[in-house]
Image 1: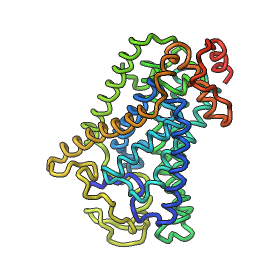
Image 2: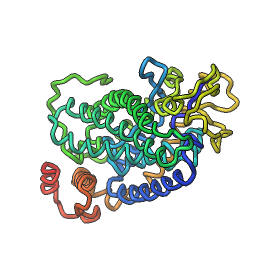
Image 3: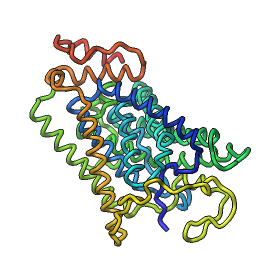
Image 4: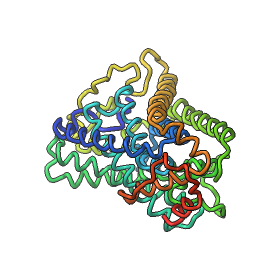
Amino acid sequence: MENLAMHISNGIVNGPVAAAFGALALVALALCVFRSRQDLDDRLAPMAGLVAAFIFAVQMLNFPIFTGAVSGHLLGGALAAVLVGPWVGALCVAVVLIVQSLIFGDGGVAMLGLNITNMALIGVAVAYLLVALLLRILPRTVSGLAVTAFVASVLSVLVASQGFVLQYWLGGTTDVGNSIGGLAGTMAAAHLLIGVGEGLITATTVVTVAKVRPDLVYALRSLRPLSTAREFPVPGGAR
Amino acid sequence: MTIGGTRLTVRSGAFILGGLLVALLLAGVVSNFASAHPDGLDSSLREGCTFDADDNITGGSCPAQETKDHELADSPLADYGVKGVDNGYLSTGLSGVLGVLITFAVGGGLFWLTRRRSATATVTAGTGTVGTAGSAGGGGVTTGTPTPRPGDTSTPTGAGRTGTDGSE
């Protein structure tokens, strides 16, 4: 039987904790709306819509990890952070999660705050901080951008997965007792591998966009220009 | 990175359209070849339980046993399928196509409605876009950096802004 639940389902975390994170997510998204206005111009707005649609599409593409009995999918935080920046990026991922929950029955409606906190807020924030740091210290080449996207993806997915562990520690509905550490370990191991997959997808996508339209890559516009020296081959760069 | 108004608009439109086509292809066709195994989160929550071939819990104790039905499990597009379409490939693909279009419409629509309006857009065609985005990005990292109001860009500050970008 095909089980396509990709996000936190109803009943996993108790109501009060879910509601608290719902309130947190609402406040954070309101801040994002406020801050995103300075980024959103005639050029970024359609790009942001495309980024949301693209993340929705790629989230459907579960890829096998471990020996194949477990799968993973893109979360999209790093991709959004690089392409449209932190504020708009968090809103992009949130839009995807809301559409998935309200229309595709994926991720409980009551759990939306938890899912948004992990993937839209934590995922994008961690990714953007790393992108901002790495783009300054790595060489100004296409491979520098690729490495930046890859590392930001891996770590953002890893930290986002631990966001769930924290939520489960606060309000998990099954008594896992002392094995919350076990859950943390299982989640970390799985999401390290998912992060590698996410990193490859994100790096490929970002490098492709940077080669076709570098002006549409927020991180390159805002942090510094990409060098014209392209001595490294582009991974999977379909032209 | 100076930008010629009309030509850019056309190229941007082409880029968005191209990207949308890729997304539609991924969600509409490639999605059928995705792994159907539980994802990292789901499999972590199933640790401790045993399952039969239909994915029903047959024993043990695990977080997943508390899973409740989704509020909108009867939605016409629930579980990435189109209700009433029996062919699995068609159902998944069609739901993916609709999902991409809905997400683009909702996301793009909201972003378009909340974007900075034309008064500043005409300025951004000249010097603004790169510089403004630069200071915005700086504000994102070091919160509290005073960002120039988008409307204040009537003075030609191209050189100064480029300097800001480089030093950031």
